[in-house]
Length: 169
Image (cartoon, rainbow, N blue to C red; front, side):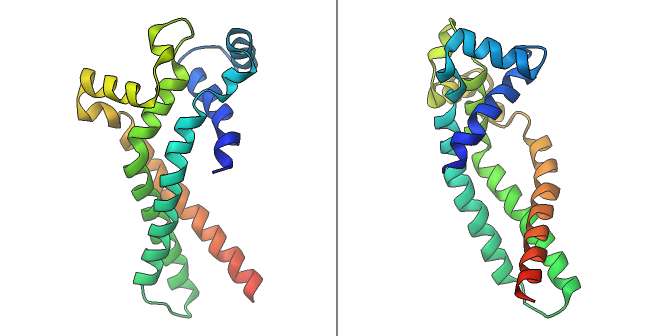
């Protein structure tokens, strides 16, 4: 949960740069603070929390459940592939569940000050996306996220399990 307060300002700048709000990080940061004050950097923290809390619950639960479902062996090769499979799958499950929340969070963060959309919260942005583009619009960019999620989370869990094995041995 605490990570959301760290993640959110970075995601705000990233999302605004992707939306063309500024040419570079420094300019985006300056424009945000000038236009919205330092509080503007916290824009979207609620959305980040709304994504991270259930997302991490799903992520860690799925990983542990998948690891328990696979038979344990002393084979390091088996453990290697098990970490990859379980970690990648847990990441895909997490993103599959929270992606609409992330989309709405990104729209909150990229709304331009002074426009009617700037006052919208998560639910209003999600409803607007649903109304304008149907259910599919809540998953715009989903395939790219899933293609990234499997290897990124597989690598994360593999490194974690390898580190824990070194600590135990």
